[in-house]
Amino acid sequence: MIRLFKRVLRSEDSHESVVECRRCGANLESADVDHCPACGSSEVASYRL
Image (tube, rainbow, N blue to C red; front, side, top):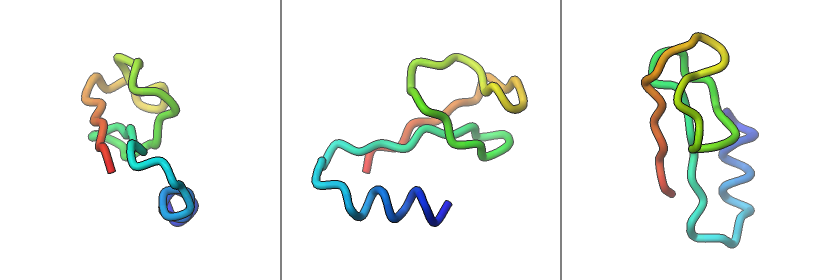
């Protein structure tokens, strides 16, 4: 999680987003996924920072 925050803080792109599973909290690489590969949940959230 700390690694993710450091990446966001270093980013000059104001359209950075975080995609994570709402069930298990896994960080996902793309917002184009329908299910979490870690737990299979369909509850995937995308947060624009």
